[in-house]
Image (cartoon, rainbow, N blue to C red; front, side, top):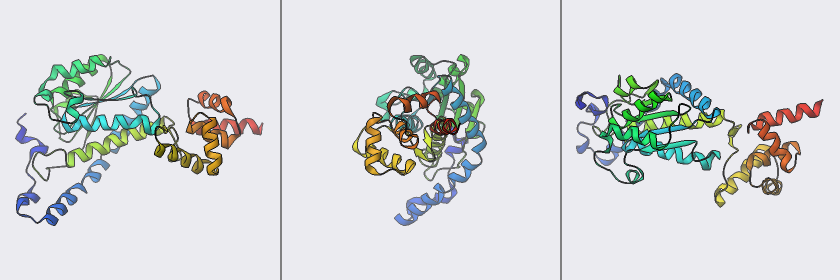
Length: 304
């Protein structure tokens, strides 16, 4: 495909003279263009929802969510994946980010790696991809050879494949099982897809991982009840979560957290049900970590 024909490479008529604008005018037009993104994504809600259900089904059979991309797209995938363990208490291998060029590419541009289709396949092989996994390829243009190589191999293996793109009728769309196409239009600076396209991709990944974690029982109400207490800030957050979920005092919340070996969800269950120690954990495990279901069974049993 001729790159000049891509949606992401067109000139934006609103910014043809941006180099002549005042600072405030530049910021205003950037902001105005950014506000277009949510409306574009609203039209993709059915597609995003369908992909979330596939991700949840994969998780429940021991599969993984794997993001793969080059440049900005790859970095966004790694960022989203890396936030899941501290926020939702997931194993680091449950959501994985792969970027063309490896870890070094997170902080600097590595020339040519995105054009290596074979490397996309190789990187999927190196993480021992299986048919249980969901692979989400991310590329604003929808034509990145590295990402296409990863998707093609994933599909051959039987994994669910998804394309997150910002172009119509892209090559990646032809390869993948599902496509989320956020066509946000020309960038403020022609071809600078870290801007509107990057914002759209970031919002999509937020939705994919967050909704999947909610459906996996990682959220109670709107509280992140599997937060890992890896630093003082997160410990205090966990205390506040326990207090908000139960109405307990600060002292009661801290005591329950300590008794439950710093497991936020178990501490909540202990305070609500009165179950102590291993009993709370056993009930949670019986319901695969779904706190609301565990609470419901306890009270049904108590009523009988």
